Amino acid sequence: MAVKIRRAALRDAQVAYSLVSEYYQAASVLLRDDRKSFSQQYFAPGTGIWLALYDGQAVGSIALRKLLPGAAEIKRMYVRPEWRGQGISLRLLAAAERFARETGYRWIYLDTSDEMTAARRLYERQGYRPCPRYNQNPQATIFMRKKLPGRISGARRSGPKRGDSR
Image (cartoon, rainbow, N blue to C red):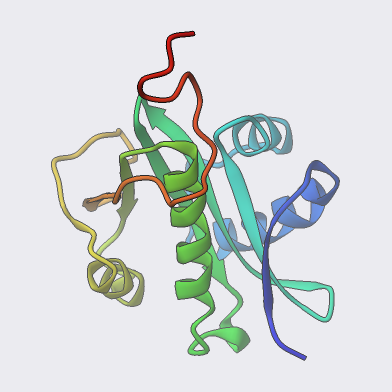
């Protein structure tokens, strides 16, 4: 059975939060969302959390939230240790980026730390480049961003089409 990537629905909030809590422990995260703020941030329009599932069990996650008009932020990328090295992080990142493009974001930002070298290398390979500090995360030492290509053809557009006189 293959690992499947899907955007979590509100009914998945507890599973998603449990996996993010595991990430908090593994990365010794100081600034943690409680379950209520987690649900408010990642189950709102223009946001999301994606789960990597194997036989119905969550083995990885990534979250995306609105940062600024036209910009989103990647948070909480985590794959359980026994599942690493199988391309799951890349698939999670691709799913979040696709959603961001379809939603109309032009940039994605992220922060990480010097200790997370594998994550930093993944982000660099996917086109993320260093940028100035954009938040006050006390544990972050590396700040990156990526310019997204235009919307994917067939993606939803809001507002009238060009030339539409509505």
